[in-house]
Image 1 (tube, rainbow, N blue to C red):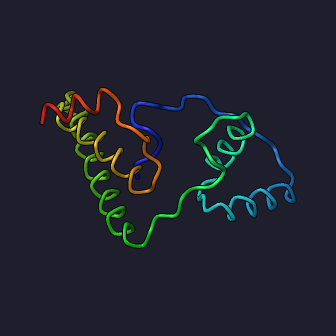
Image 2 (image 1 turned 180 degrees about the vertical axis):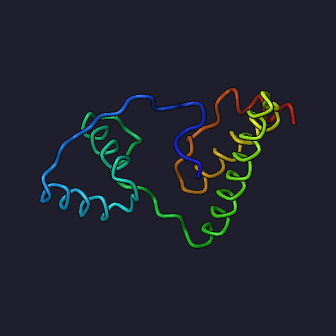
Length: 130
């Protein structure tokens, strides 16, 4: 599954110990937002509390009309990941595979309503090259 923003890898982990009751309350609160992963929900809540705009505590639900497209994007991303793994075994990653992975990642985010509000200069450059 495509996760996060292409090119933005999270490398740090924060652990928190909870009681059974605290964990139950956190899961109940997370379920109300539509987020599937507790870690993503915690990150969004903390970022929102810190005043970071554009990172809500809940996730837009994928409209039914986009659910099939999202599923196909996820499958395509999985296939590309397998190709990437194969490429790494051969010690080379074709530039087109990397570009396709990033494009599918952006498309999956856009289908979920999580993409950037405006194109970056880099995106515009890619459009011009096509």
